[in-house]
Amino acid sequence: MGLSLEQALGVHPAALKLRAERGEIIASNLANENTPGFKAHDIDFRARLSEAAQGSSSALRFESDEIQYRVPSGASQDGNTVDLATEQAEFAQNTVDFQTSLTFLNMKLKGLSAAINGST
Image 1 (tube, helix red, strand yellow):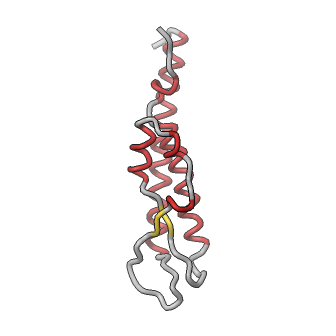
Image 2 (cartoon, rainbow, N blue to C red):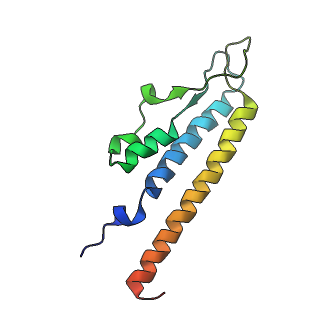
Image 3 (tube, rainbow, N blue to C red):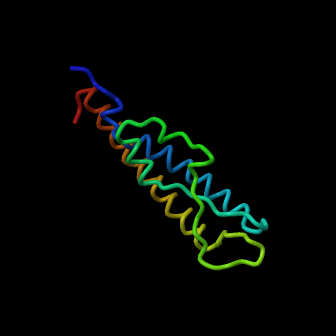
């Protein structure tokens, strides 16, 4: 009976990659808070993770046309749709979620190591 590392680790490696990409997108939004006409971007994390869980490797590659625009909470005179409070909250939540996925992945790897070494 062979061990499939992908099966053993589950969706956590894909979640880490998606969270890292999402963090970059949100950081770009924050960096462009004062750029006239800049439109805030994001991805549909749940849809992407679901695709990745079903084995679609294309879910982990980002194309510019697949990144969505964030709906602004209020109008701005210069056309910029970045809301600082929203982006900071999304960035913080994404960071916590990244850490959670990293913790789960670490626990899985420790369990595999214990099984290989024959310890409990």
